[in-house]
Image 1 (cartoon, rainbow, N blue to C red):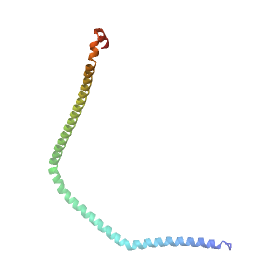
Image 2 (image 1 turned 180 degrees about the horizontal axis):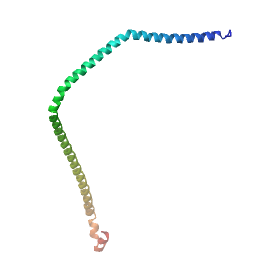
Image 3 (image 1 turned 180 degrees about the vertical axis):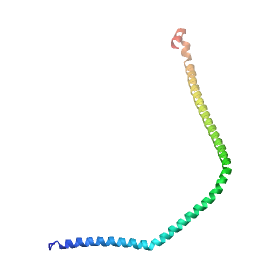
Image 4 (image 1 turned 135 degrees about the horizontal axis):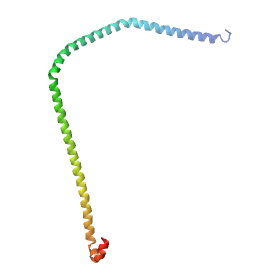
Length: 145
């Protein structure tokens, strides 16, 4: 290597050495952690496995009793649920019918109010225009109306 570029070569060599050293240190640290914590982890997983098998065996024991209970009361529960559903459906249907009736009554009331206003307006026009109609003769009345 040329004399002036030697520090640059030394710097890159040191950088590569440092990288390799960090990589080795990381690998050694992982191995040490596996050795230290591996026993504890294995013990934790063994306890977890034992607990799961215990719970599963208890669940199997309980399921036999529960199957008989469900078979005994299942039909009664289903019938009760059907009765409740039917009651709710009837109440919902009644509420919908009542709402329809109210809307119909309100629309009829609004229509009759509008008709009454129109009839009142015709009556007021007839009262105000009565003296003009009295002045007109028969043929003029027929032409106007």
